[in-house]
Amino acid sequence: MSTPPIASSALPAATNSGLPRVGRAGYALIGAIALAICLILVAFNVGQFAIAPRELLSLLMSAVFGTTVHARENADIVLFEIRGPRIAAAFLVGGALAAAGAAYQNLFRNPLVSPDILGVSSGAALGAVVGIMLGVSVIGLQALAFGGGVLAVAAIYFIGTHIGGRRAGHAGHDPVLTLVLAGVVIGSLLGAGIALSKYLADPTNQLPAITYWLLGSFASVTRSDLLVALPLIVIALVPLWLLRWRINLLTLHDDDARALGQDVSALRLIVIVAATLMTAASVAICGIVGWVGLVVPHAVRLMVGAEFSRLLPLAFLLGGSFMLAVDTIARSVAAIEIPPGVLTALLGTPAFLWLMSRTLGSRS
Amino acid sequence: MTRAALLAARALAVGYHAKGSVNIVAHGMEFSLQAGTAIAVLGPNGAGKTTLFRTLLGLQPPCRGEVLLQSRAINTFAPNELASQLAYVPQAHGAMLPFRVQEVVEMARAPHMAWTALPSAQDRAIAHAALEQLGIANLADRIFTTLSGGEQQLVLLARALASGARCLLLDEPTASLDFGNRLRVQDALNDLKSQSYAIMFTTHEPQQACDLASGVADRTLSIARDGQAVLGPTSAATTREALGALYGVAAERVPMMVDA
Image (cartoon, rainbow over all chains, first blue to last red; front, side, top):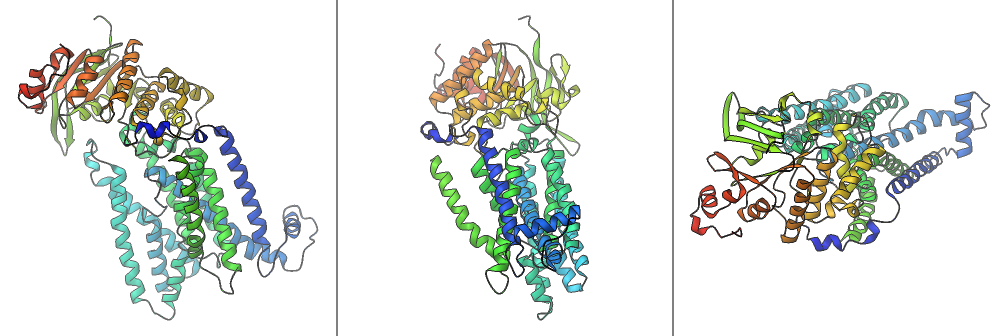
């Protein structure tokens, strides 16, 4: 509405022509799959016990078809117990966070919201911190983190839909805004709880564990962690995939979408449940890894547009690839491991700024 | 006029239901909208134009009276059925993510599609035909958010056509547009009227009301600040005296806007 008509007629023809629309997204998808495969092969080949592609293939063949193994001793342990789970976790968590972020950016009609806008990370963090202070087992810690994340979102959703919900007929009532505000308020309450726990924690044992957990890491992910998180993330991806076109309707204003016959509340609830499940499952096994869920879907949208059925697969693949690349660098460049959250920001910020300046520059 | 009404209101009062009490915003609405005709809804801000539209679209129940779509009460329609007969054209606002124009228009096929479906080739063709109907097929691959306000408004109008509805409700279709774009939207509405669409639109600004109302609308539903609604010929509703009374200003301060 504020765009003057001249600006649009002066748009460069390049935005309109170029590759046909299915073609361009198709090429991007093929590129993303190729990138993911390359990164996975590289990730196996990096580290103390490098597994080259040929050895990897041989081990996989023997595991699946029972063929003879042409690999070094212990290579199977490194593959299936240590590096494999870690690579799978990094890829899966990165993909899940980016997919959840893409869904939330549509739902909140805002290209710069992250999967933890409804408090899932703060809730999970508080759960984990309480677990550390109580000295529970690893499994208990993950359960508390997952439960904390889900509970926080449930509370925020309940508050957001019940404040003003009684006056559902009111034209000025915006449920999305109410959800965001409830998220901000409950989020800071949870933040205060985390701060208090850190203040009260034993500074020699508990406080470092809390700090370590809050930074996020894939170093301690085991195969059993993965077997718990994997089904949850896959189950949550299914509704997003099935509804990948219909989720576009959530970007419209509520009245607009309802006038198109869409039951907005039901669709919104499905998306929130799915995004919460996969974010909570991710956070529970590897701690809080920020940045990916915010910026990867935004960057993918700059490349292929907002249409969710095109956005979702690319966001998942590129989110996973990005996370895997970051984790591989984090465990190999220095003698100690660098927290992936720090690296995502260090690597991602310049890449994102470059992409943004290119895309916006070509449009103005 | 013997043609059957597509959309009709009988003794309609609209407002909010809040905690058991009923807060009526506008009342006394009585109209029949036939195919090939248009009604303008004119009134100051806050008079209840938006509330009327939400009621007509079945998004909130009427306080009194009833709304009929093809002689059937509106609350007996399933949401998808209603959406494919009665289309809403919101104000063009910049709050959308960067969808392509074709994708924006395809969203109108939602009431015809299963929850898990993608738009079929037929849905895409219908969407494209709607753009062609308004002469803006050249915009199909453009990014919606980079269009001008007038172009966005036409795209949203095309989206309404793609739903298959014959009855269109437009919220302030020209409010934020400059002179040239206003004329383009006005021409498009006149074309649709001559193609037997039934059109109803709101406007709050007398100048635009007169441009649009005298150009497009045969009748005007005036809603005063106190909520009293009166339906009359557009020429009678847009005189200096009528506008002065509607907006609560002296008649001589209303500029002459319609060529007598």
